[in-house]
Length: 177
Image (cartoon, rainbow, N blue to C red; front, top):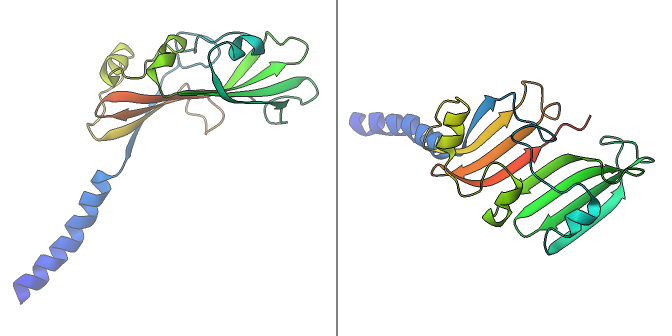
């Protein structure tokens, strides 16, 4: 009986540890070269709303005045484009529609790889090595990279969703303030 009681106590201690290790894991890095609107990790996107419309078949499009958070609604327009495997959220100047800044972009299909320097379907290790970042544990599911240690929303960040070391989705979150 004492053995059984000890066994259950050990089981109650070990079981939660195994559940924690099976959960999603995130690894965070700071990389100064991460920038949504310039530099080597900037997505290579067209520079006008009309050019965005020519990228491919859109599932949905939403054009509206910009929010106070992303720009002056009187002078800026927010545009969101949804494609199969790519979503783009931008803010354009009303007087200069060829000038915009990226709010966010998500790439989840390799057909859009020509628009981002990081590729869906590529292994994560060459990217980490190129940037002198440490390897990630095998169970890692998200690599979160920002250009500063500022709180969320105050830095440009890239989230790389990975499965077994392969990049499955790339998400840019861009500082707009």
